[in-house]
Image 1: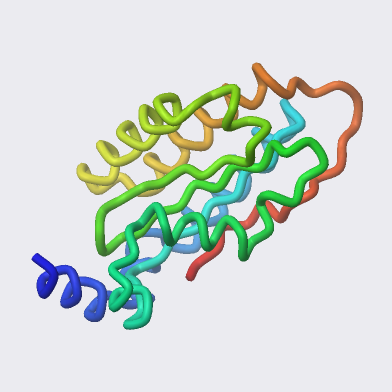
Image 2: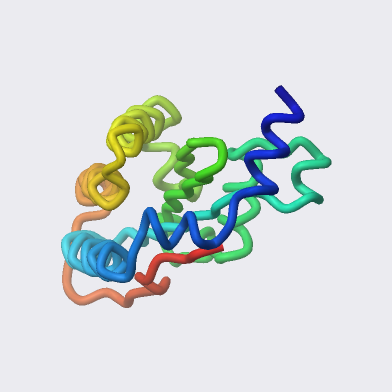
Length: 165
């Protein structure tokens, strides 16, 4: 299994991300994040990666471990109310991970995030990548609306555009 995982990752490329998420899909995802954040004070980021480089593969990093790294690199944790959420997709592993800052994570919990990940993965298995991400954004946003409802005008603390790694 280790060899097959290495091959999937090392043969993955940016072209797979572009095939799964053409420009129009990326624009729709950015617009969905912007619209969702207008309804609450949470912050959502979406990042997609075709495959891991040799270093993380050698370390046998899981998608979850990589998502935590990306969460830190993108500074999703650095929000005023500890309410940042990263939706991370590792295409080579067909794995979605949601990493949330401690404020919102304590309220939603691992089971709540896993439910959203499974719904997204079902869409991805059917080849509906844009729909899968939009499903995830909507579900994450529902939690954020519940726990961080919009009250007045708030700053958009994190960029809304998808991150292609």
